[in-house]
Each structure stands twice: as C-alpha cells, then as structure tokens.
Amino acid sequence: MNRRSFITLLGGAAAGPLVARAQRGGKVYRIGILEPIPAARNAANLEALRKGLRDFGFFEGRNLIIEYRSADGRAERFPDLASELVGLNVDLILTRGTPATTAVQKATGTIPVVMMTMGGPGAIVASFARPAGNMTGVITFSTELTAKRVEVLKELVPSLTRVALLHNMGNLAVPAEWEETKAAARSLGLEAELLDVRSESDLSRAFELVVRQRIDGLVVGADGLTQMYQQKIVEWVARNRVPAVFPAREFVEAGGLIAYAVNYSDLYFQLAAFVEKIFNGAKPGDLPVQQPTKFELVINLRTANVLGLEVPPTLLARADKVIE
Image (cartoon, rainbow, N blue to C red):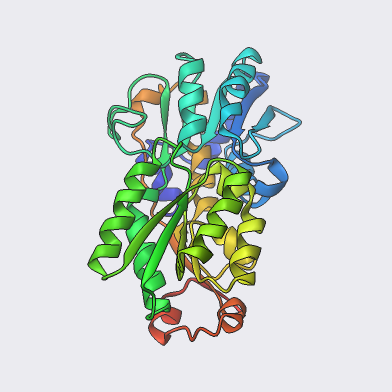
C-alpha cells in the first residue's frame, strides 16, 4: 500500500491542509518512543518515521520533541521506562513489540498509544477494526510469517532435517510462533526444537545445544533480545556454519543468510499517519489497526557461498534484495 492510499484509508485529506493543521497554534508536540534497542541501532527505521512526520508538518526542533527510551534488550526494563515517559507528560507514545506495548498499556489509559506489535486480536486490543481505548497501530505478522520462514529455509537447504526456533518465550506473543514452527516442521518432515533465550547468557547455552543436538537449521525470532544481540547471533551461526533464517533485513545486512519479514521501515513510515490523525483530534480506539502490505525476502549470496549453499534460481527470482 502506498502512502496516499494509506492516508485515504485513515480518512486523511490533502497534504497541504494536513501540514497547516499540524502547525496550527504553534504547539510543540512531545512524542515518547519505547523500543527494545538503542536509537543508533534503529536509525533506518527512525528516519522513515521522521520522514513520515515531516510530510505531515512535524519537525524536530520546531514543533516536535522526541523522547526515545530503549530497554537495551532487557524486557524487564520496560515498565520503568513506560512510567518515565508517562511522567514526562508526552502527547503520544509509540511502541515496538508486545512487551513494550503491554508495559505502556499498564502505565497509562489516557495517553494515546500507537503500537507496532506482533500480537493478534485479543492480545493487546479487542479487535483490529475497533481497538477501543487509547491504543491503535500496526501489526507485524510475526506469527503468521514463522511457518513461511521454515519453508524458505527448507527450500534453501534441501538436506535440512532438524530445525530450531531461537526465541524468547517470556514474550507473550512467542508461544504462538513456536506452535507455528512445530506445525510447519511437521508438514515438511522436519524435527523441531525450541531454544528459549531470555538473557545474553541463555544465548551461549542455546548455541551449545545447537551443536550437541546436531541442529542443522535455525529460525531466529523477532524479540528485543535477538535484536540487541543481532551481531553475536549472526557471527556465531556463520562461524559454526549453521544456516539460519532471520526476522528482519538488518540481520542479513549484518552478514546473516536470509530473511523473510515485513518491511519495517515502511511500517515506521505508516505510524506517522496515525500520529497526524490523533494530533488533529481522532481517538486512537476509533482508528483501525492496520496490517502490513509490504513483505521482503532478502538473501546474502556472500554468506550462502561461505556456507557452501547454492541458492535455487526460484528463490533468487523471488528475492526483493540480494547482497552479492
């Protein structure tokens, strides 16, 4: 979905009037952002958000202040960080991930919240069509894409027999992904293992299990912990020659093998439309939760060559980006 159709879907008007309304009265808006990783690690997505906000007339240093808070991969920090943002009397809070969103949900029932989360209907909001309360946003289809990642990995590695899901089961949205992983593995004649990681030390133990149990393929889930230790995961699987499929293009750009995911920068760009509508009087609970429309398959041919894998032409033809 392009920007124009997305704005129309939200009931937006032409760009000129939107900018004028955004700047009306000289108000300076304060947005809180609660994320699992530091801003420097999230630069491309934040730039997409800022571009969307600028399109609607919101400029940092002029009429917009952004308060960014990162849990640095430690989900237990989210409640305190959420309370901190609420204490700053921000006008709106943006969140990424189910743990961050649930923390803000508990911290405030009045400040508008625009979320980007993997939880389905009932996990965070009552329904996508009418989320109600002070929350709306976009979903990332993490659960729905899990089975596809297993299929892609099998297509790339036909000899695959045992696949493991590396994920944080402390994240309320993750058990559903594990069920999807098991179902997809069964359909492909694979054995499935769970590597539950909730801290950096858990990663080392998980890596030992991969070797001990002769797991020959890894599905890496999208969680603050895996995002925070992205480079450590990418380097370990490369060093131990374990083919892995990742939940975002950033992992592949860092040297990972392959990713199948939503286009996160596009989702961040879409968040700006929610911000504009809310700052101009819309109630978050009246704005339907949006589903992603852009998905991307990213392949790192250099890594495939190092692993001795020949990427099937059919997979290459479907790729949105190939790193050579």
